[in-house]
Each structure stands twice: as structure tokens, then as C-alpha cells.
Image (cartoon, rainbow, N blue to C red; front, side):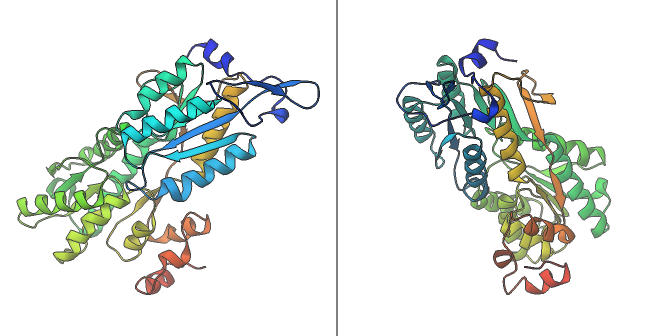
Amino acid sequence: MKKSSLLAAAALSGSAALLLVGCAGGGGGTTPTDGGDGGETMAGRACVILPDAASSPRWENFDRKYLEEGLTEAGFEVDIQNAQGDVNKYSTIADQQLTQGCGVMLLVDYQGAAEAVAAKATAEGIPVIAYDRPFTGADYYVSFDNVEVGRLEGQTVLDGLETKGVAPADAVVVYMGGDPTDGNAAMFKEGAVEVMEGAGITAAAEPPGVWDQAKSQTNFEQALTSLDGKVDGVWVANDTNAAGVIKVLQDNNLEGVAVSGQDANVAGLQNILLGWQTATVYKPVADEAAAAVDTAVALLNSETPDAGAELEDGTPYVQVTPILVGPDQVKDVIAAGDASYDEVCTADVLAACEEFGVTE
């Protein structure tokens, strides 16, 4: 746990019903304002930095929307910006936000850039929430159970091998992990390896981890060449990277290969319906955003957020439950509003949508 003085600096006086009003003016931390009823509340400006738009479409399509809706409803003035995959831009955005004033910061790390920002925020008495990706210096970490995400991915590979009729100990499996600078990537791999290698799988090849579809495609193509075109399964850390892997499989007419992923993005759902991807791990972003909002409100009320776990460094970890989605569950993702029927069920996928009960 972090120092109680840090939370006190962001304390909110009055009841939760009077929670938060917009922050004006410079400096970090929070500023007293008139609550309108003779009492005093503390300003609540939520500063959010997203990492990019390339590693996954979720950041702009879902996280921005759900965080803005949730934080606004909670009474925050909301400032959400995207670093667009640039660590220097990340730092510049943070400095601008801190100058304008933040009651709380929610940071999605990008290549370690969030650590320096967290240090600045902490020095100003501003609580910091590591959102989705862990980093040193955060007061709380809010994300999905990322080891469990990896376990579900590992189980996806096993399920695909079973369908293919290949024993795990005999299978040629390639590991395609995420960017090692993202703390989640190690947790995804931990869970996947636990399940896969526990069943007897040994990695036949393991290219460098990235969050980049084009690089994943190139890396997998080289790995496949080194394996003389033989592959039974591919553990892939997300759907974006899986799309690159699948392009190589299609180019080489390799059907029935077990392929994992996560995020339940449009391409991933289409690949699942068409049989190119075995399953994806669906992470309802609305649930993660809601947990982050609850954590932010608790911090500004000088309360202890409800965290059921912690990271190795002791950071309290608020975990959200992921869901495994195969072809029969694609309709559930669309029904939840986290994918569009029109985007998923295009002309070349329409027959598969009908087969698996995906409707508007």
C-alpha cells in the first residue's frame, strides 16, 4: 500500500453524492471549490493517457469511450489523450496535464514512459492508477487477470490441437508473444506456458515479442521457414498479431492450425468464425473501465479501493475476469456492444455468422 498522506492529499470532503467538480487552473493535485451548498468539495480532474492506436483498436474504440463515460458520470472533468506510440509525446502530454491540474491520473504504460510520469504525479500528491498495464510507481493497478488471460490462450492452443488430432507432446508450436516492455506480456506468457507446457508442449520456435501485426507476420514467416513449413499450433498473444500469423498460414494453405489471441477485435472474431483462429480472450473493456472509475472515486474519497490481489512489488491489483470466446460465443460479444454486426458479418463472413447464430 502507498502512504496514507498521498491519499489524504487527494481527499474529497463531503458525501459521495457531492463528489467532484471540474478543476480550473494550474498546478497538480486538487483544489478546494465551493460545493454550492455551503460545504466544500475538492476538484476532480481525471487525466488519462492511452498508449497508441496501433497495438490494438481497443484503446480508441472502447477504452476512451468507456472511461470518458464512466469518469464523467462520476463527476470528473475528463482529459483523455493518446501518446500515439511516442514516448516523448507521452511525457509532453503528461506535463501539460499536470500543469493544468489533475486530481487523479490513469495511465496506460507505453515502453516505460508511465514510470517518470507517476513519479512526478506522486511528488505533487496525485494518486496514480496503472490502467491495463503495470508499471513501477503506481498506487493501484486495474486490469484483467492477465495470468488467467494467458491460461485461456494456452487452453485455446490445446483445444485446437485436440481438434486437429495432434498430441501436445508431438505438436510443433510457435510462441508469438507481446512486447516485453509491456508488463502484461510477461503475465500472458506465464499463464500460457503454465497450461501448454504442463500438457507437454515444447516451443519449436519463439521469435521476439512485439505488438505489431506487420512485424508479427514477418517474424512468423521466418519461423515457419525455419520449421520447413511445419506447424500445428501458434500461441499468439493478441488478435492483431494473430491476423499477421493467419495471413502467413493462408498464403501457405495451412488450414486447421491452432491459433490463440485476445481482445475480440473485428478481425479476430471474423477469423474465428471462418475457422482460421481457434478462439480469442474477450476482455469486456466496460468492466475494466468501471473498475478503474470505482478505484479513482475511492481514492478521492480517502477510502481504500477494493483490491483482491497484488503484484510482486506489492502494488494492489484490482482484477477483472476475462472470457474465452470461440465461434459459438461471437454473438455474445456483438450483443454486448463490443463489436458491430455490420463490421463482423461482411459478405465473406455472412454464411459463418448465420451458422453460429450471429444476428443484428
